[in-house]
Length: 252
Image 1 (spheres, one colour):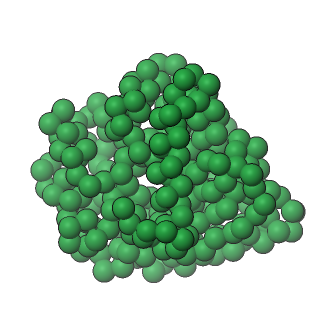
Image 2 (cartoon, rainbow, N blue to C red):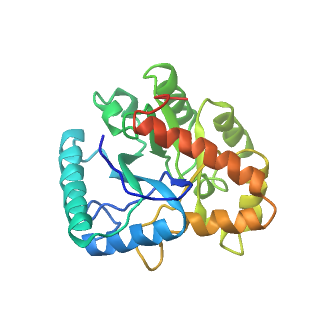
């Protein structure tokens, strides 16, 4: 785990970002990452998880080495430039594959010091074995899956499959952008009101097509009479972030 403490009056917690430079298809330079972090601070973000993509083509050890190098480069740049940033904590967005629950070092891919794992599900119809593996992460490995950007799978799965997922002891993450998109924000707000969504993230990759927007989305929702739902989401998000820092429960 690694964190960075900065003076920040923010109150939001971004649990999904690709802010580390050069790690994946996210930010390509420290300069661009620093600008995104500055924008996040301006939007009221107090803490941000750096969740670079992890795919099984790479060993966990190699991924962790690359992640630490990217983190150190970014921290050095921020210090040199005196650039504001939320408090950062390291994690990963882990792509599901059939042997994932047997990964020896799976715990090291969790969010910081916690037992929460940001899990990217398959972009296809899920076989029953997929849901069994998700359940086994909790029951066998003691890891709580945080299902990344649930809105991307919602229309791919039948109602029974999604109901089975929601009945499990998992957390559901939704991207902030869906609350800002006119065509789909009605569906997103409905899921928020139904309690489907527990935590949120920007899933920011760049400053153009996928910029930091968590604060913008939450502020809009709060102004639209959804403040109580936002408060619940932010409470869950803060709890997960604190656990990642080793300051609270390591798992739900």
